[in-house]
Length: 158
Image 1 (cartoon, one colour):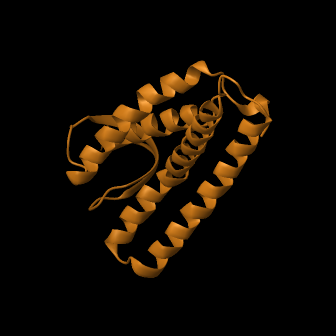
Image 2 (cartoon, helix red, strand yellow):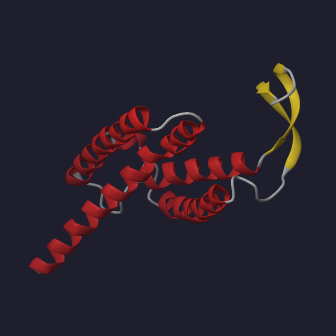
């Protein structure tokens, strides 16, 4: 993976600061049927399809932005954590980053395939919603786990 595409290391901490609270807030909203804080504002939408109203293109609409803000903060935080350089970015780290990304994509699509086969109706919308985030989550978990395991093995050898 090219180092040119990675953010400087200082963005990893900013990413964690965004990722952890947005994950907690997202889980809170998820367990409360996405009812939580009411941040309803009039906002611009490329496409809006109100439940019992009409579809609108390139129009202003009233919307609750709570889920939008949590999702945006989660994605930005996860991208910062995932694609920030390590303090000692070397060829091993680059290879680990690439293999973790490949592994995350494969596991993500395996889980999506299971969802396609065994989840139906409105529950499938939840599968698709969570699926948006699983590649980054799986990547972060696997990359940091292997990195931790490797650092522990190196420190045990000393």
